[in-house]
Amino acid sequence: MAYGLEPVFAKGTLGLYVSERITKWVDETHTFAESALFVLNAEGKVQVVDISNAPFTRPDVAGLIGGLTFAKGQDYPPRGTA
Image 1 (cartoon, helix red, strand yellow):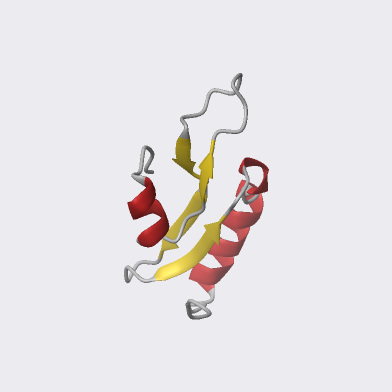
Image 2 (spheres, rainbow, N blue to C red):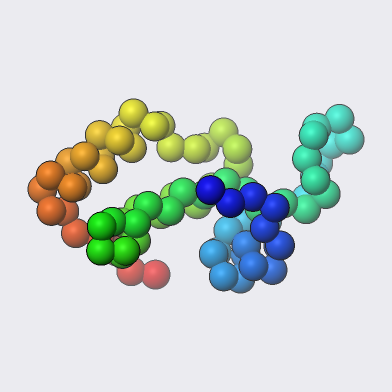
């Protein structure tokens, strides 16, 4: 878990979306990284990446656990390239 990332690191190194606060009454810093999820497998390889540009698009935890359980049980390889 990470928070308080510098915008240059968040965007440039991790590829996260960086946003500016949009309202005065929301408890947000002026510039912040949007949420993301990175899951590494037992070999230290990236198995899942979920990068969001909005706080309401976070993955469903039950679905994520089910998918990861399947991946581990079936020796399912990481997919895709960046």
